[in-house]
Length: 454
Image 1 (cartoon, rainbow, N blue to C red):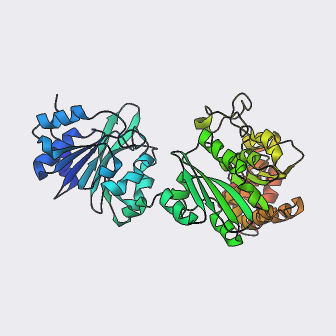
Image 2 (image 1 turned 60 degrees about the horizontal axis):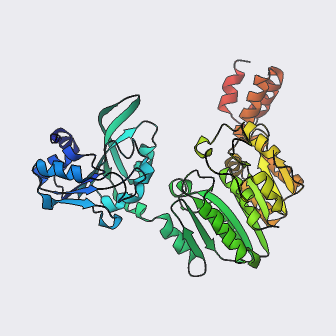
Image 3 (image 1 turned 60 degrees about the vertical axis):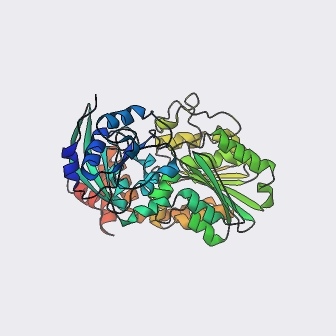
């Protein structure tokens, strides 16, 4: 049965002209009927799946037939199955798809091909999907009305594209190829990429999450890029498109290739560097370059549940394959000359992983009460740069590290965690001493309010 035209929704969008109505995945047939009837526009039916792959997903022949039956001429309907055939025309819709049943991040790269400034996108946003903050830099989002979905708060919204939308079109591949230049290289598959930038005979291999680099860093550069560039060191940046822990046979094959072709052998010094998931990768993939150094901040050793059954975080990656020569980082990192491991001994998961690194080449540096986001905390304290510089340069000692760590005494997070720990253990006298020490040297809102009750 052909659905009735959705004139009421069209009325709320305030559009005065539409050249093309783009229906992603055949999810907005009723709105497409209304748009054609009002604006005499073309209708593009885009075959697309939940991961944003054009040409994949459900066949749209039935949607096309419904539109024809509703009076839309067949020659005004385009079935789009190739990314290069996407076009903008004023109105795009994907209710129930991206932002709701599918992740909004998969739609983001396609937006500049579908919209120009002033165009409208109709979609449903499920609470907690992250769609609002992702769309915010690129335009304005107006809530229209609630949508009934069992067990979930979903809102139908109209996103109106602003002038910055075109910036999305600069993909990571575009950025990476520019950075690589003629002397470096860029390699990619759907889920991972390798970017090499040659500068000197010191190479730093970093590991990063593409989402973080592209969405949360203004320079849209890999982890450690600016710092490494300033030192004039060469860089090999390995990117994961999601929380994959780099468990991809393609990634393993790339490291095999770099090892077997003598890529690493051309450098006098090689250091693998990463934090958390990237810290795991730094410890695991150093096996491709025996004798290299590692700097790992709060790394996991593996997420193989048969080995670390106590690991309750990162469930999205539990089912991946952690076997092979780059699998258990606590074991294969034995190939490194030295593994420098920074972690918080009071963070249970991080401490348990650190305990699995037992090789004689491991130097463990403890940063109590700094949490899993240790790298961020050290950066806020102003000591990440000198610690990293010394570690990557091969001169970091335990004494130097702990001297730098003295800066935590004036770091608000550390002060708060120390105060909370004293309170939790019932040591109220110690908590008072900590509180008085902190408050005579500055302000800490949490401690100041808590001290009123002591």
